[in-house]
Length: 388
Image (cartoon, rainbow, N blue to C red; front, top):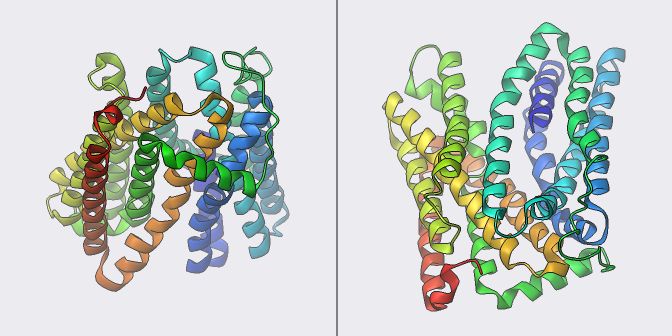
């Protein structure tokens, strides 16, 4: 995750410096999340069918090829917009490819009993990678320059890639050998239809999609405007502190929840945490007080870490063994692919009514949707309260 974010820091800077294109800046967001929306279920089917170690290594290799491609284009000063578009799409595909296989590896490593802890720790260190990536990327950009900085970024992908040659776990050791289900959009549609009968899975997948669609990645993209309006020192300093507060919340939340075990993985816990995330985002959007805004970002980071890790745990525990990869693909499609929607609900709407108003309205919609899902779960009986 750190290497992923290092690449964003260096390439986004270079693309803006060279082209000054707001359209290309928008395409950067679209290209990152559309592969999750289109291919997550198919990539989950690959994880069901093949050795997950090799699926992840292919994704890592694709990440490295993309970084090398950027480096060659920077070195030869031959970068064109179509080059950038191809590399951005390939980077998004690499991110979508490794997600379901990684989650299956977690289940294989620790088994059912320790899975909540494994998912929570995995999410925590993902947040840590997201938190550290911009700092390391900026250091590489300033210290080595964009060309050698992006080449150096390849090294950060190696530890996981090499580790997967040394572990005996394949993602299928505990439950079964890889299946031979077909991989394609028709199979993806069958998987989606097959989930309708499990109301708990439906609730968790829809809940993840609501958070992605209404808020998603919009906080990062709109943070410069919030930094300018909230004050708190120079705009650059305020911007950095606001980003750090949001990322730190996820890390702190993961560590505290792991150390204390306060929250058990259940549908109710996921709903409460999502509602808290919506409320803190709403409060952040409407406040003019900088310290209070920082507090809301930290609490919101804790709440979203708890919500996503709990929902993902419930989905993993309830997914049929033979279809776990595809079910995780559906979850990834909802939790990651629908982040594209926040570009409309907050970004484009913000251009018309202001980002404070658009973010507040989106957060309110997330809260309303969470309450609606809560009502849906209650109509389906008490059996939905637990993951198994």
